[in-house]
Length: 156
Figure 1 (cartoon, one colour):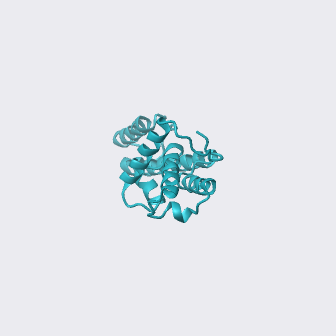
Figure 2 (cartoon, helix red, strand yellow; figure 1 turned 90 degrees about the vertical axis):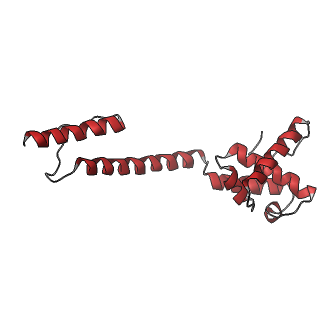
Figure 3 (cartoon, helix red, strand yellow; figure 1 turned 120 degrees about the vertical axis):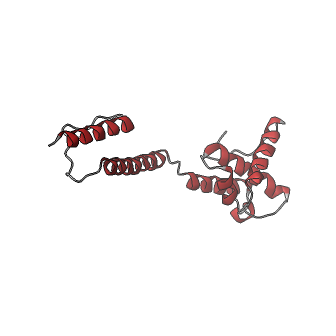
């Protein structure tokens, strides 16, 4: 191995250590025609896949798959208030529907990692500001001392 090839291998080793905080096993064996950039790209792709898997495993472990959790909240709220899920997703402005819908949106925001737009889609809304308004309205009711039915599994 010539001095240039040794230098390239050493730089690849240093780059990997800098990127991932781990040292490469010594000696690094690369085919003669391997570009160090290809090694770094392959390692980044491998690390990305590994991190995604760890994230998915963690969410599964705590039972916090965001959309599934939002759907569970929606179902629990509908059951507790004695209305259908389709009514929670409807455009109805009846108080008997609006208050549970706002309560459900507030719980979804509090107990999931879903964004306002994702929660809006969960409740058949096109604008995320509807969810923001629902959360603020529910907070105001709570501050005013209004009480709400406890949702089994989602106690505040």
